[in-house]
Image (tube, rainbow, N blue to C red; front, side, top):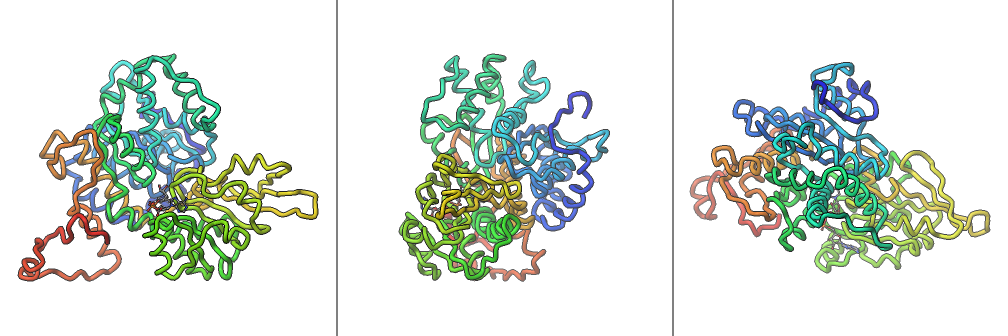
Length: 496
Ligand code: NAI
């Protein structure tokens, strides 16, 4: 608040609508609300200055207000160009103020950003008022989803160290050119900005599979600049959000995007990891005949045992009605695949980045015509005007369709994920203050998961709301199993 309260959102008058949704979401997020109660007095995030990059939805709004309720100061951007709920962004900016006199949190996010705008918002969450003169006014924690904020900071430090931003090569994707342009402008204005920021950062907590992969790669080469907590691999995150979350939000996105009856259709799910398992189950639940593709023999065998046909993409490319990528990999459905698809086949991705579907190749097919049916739903007509004319439908331009065409995972499952996020923030922010940290562990510039006892705590916080009657171990049963009555109940290598 005050003169330095800067933010960029679509429409601040949506705040009231956002606030109503946030109020209902709070009821469905018992883990976050329990943390607000537990830490109301001790304020373990007092002094934390968090740069957050995570889909600016209603659920994230409850996360942000939990962080501030625990004492943190926050600046926020979305981690995807299509995922912001503009009403949630408005409510967070307004906070306890009014649209004329907002008093909440600076948010830089709106639905349907361009890529240059997206990378501008990523820089905004790292650029705190006054921090150019006094680095301690800048961020000291990052909360990331997919690793873009972490990437921008690391690339910034790397190029500042080298004294220049390299030129893009012909092979570099358009998005990387945009990042380079952003950093070049920044470096010209201030050659030490990212270096100063990085020195203040105590750690990052990372939400998703793809971001975690990037962090482990950085740590392996010795390039990670601060400790990281892998939130994704908490059991109460990836075995719940990735699976049951997508089981809800994938059909939501398909229905809002197309309203095509899923029952009776052939649905091809690429990847049978956590997200793929939830996707396949949802589509089967709607009566689709589901075919899975996999590269990992263990996951392929799991899919077969779960009763799905497992095939290579080329075996089903002409029969599938619906193709969903969930791999976190790249080049899964290429232009040469898309030209072999049935008329009106639907293609969508729920993996973190848009490189699973070859959108650039699709645009280069000679004579292809793109028609916007509505925002985030596009028909691509092939062989237009000839007898062979047919079209395919692409959701959210190949980006996360459950957030682009719908509103992402529902509150209850995000409560589990975000309870892990908040505990990760408390842990890393207080790492040099044993009294404030949750575990008293020491951290190097490596990637860590939270201990299992905290994972079990997250689950426990979500049982009452569902009326779960949990059986208690007796002392002698616990001794027999070699565990404590209060947990943890499983060894670290247990897989759930
Ligand atoms: P995972 O690693 O459990 O599963 C991915 C699966 O894809 C693996 O089993 C792998 O063997 C398989 N795979 C890799 N390359 C393949 C190929 N070429 N063809 C067929 N299968 C292939 O990862 P998880 O947790 O399921 O996440 C997948 C992606 O979804 C990640 O990018 C993650 O960040 C993202 N994600 C998206 C969410 C959403 O709301 N849309 C929620 C959670 C995660």
